[in-house]
Length: 285
Picture 1 (cartoon, rainbow, N blue to C red):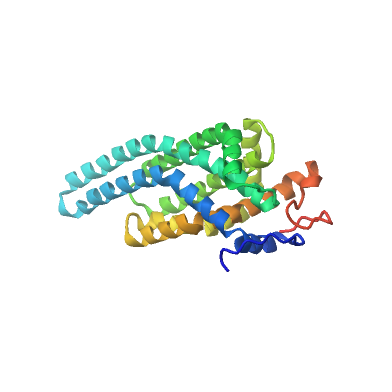
Picture 2: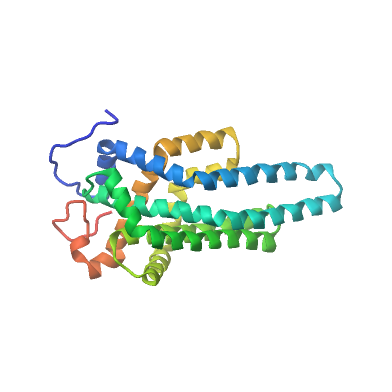
């Protein structure tokens, strides 16, 4: 029953909550495909971060066993390794972003009921969105790595307050990244216009955005918390099998709700509530 596909015509869901459960039930194979694709595009980044996490853990484990001068040298070594790790990771963020750009197009078609073939839609999404996605990945990679270095310089090594502030600012930029990827699958905007819209959409509904992204992306946060360990491996396997797909579904539906509220209601009324029963023009969650 979990993999059942429904081909009989049905009335459109009346809100995005109903649409979510309908897509979970009727399109489970597609969300599994999306999960696998995202996992494959993120694999180089995950491997690179995992290797560096292991080496950093080995260095940290030596701190209590050496003198204060040697401890300082270990921390300096970790910092320099962080610089190298950050620089090398940027192309991996760019690769991941190109995959997410194509997936955003596939997810858009799924929630709009316009999808015909997963492979064809993925290829079309990749062809249409790879340039902007690449630049979004470049910008995000630079930002996330710059934040990491600034956190080290301002708050020092493993400071809890610094980690909390870093996570909060990171969620803001993740929100902008998600809105940017979702926008390019819906609208035909110039890149700077896309960036401006992403910033406005993020800041206009800041605390709701932070809460949504914090909850939805919490499994990824758990992987970072447990680092290279059995719990993180189990969570990653679950994400690769189905989790990334459902995260994509939730964030796509949420992005479209935000687009309806701040863009479509004023500029594209015919797109309001697209994919759900929009006999009236009220914006449904």
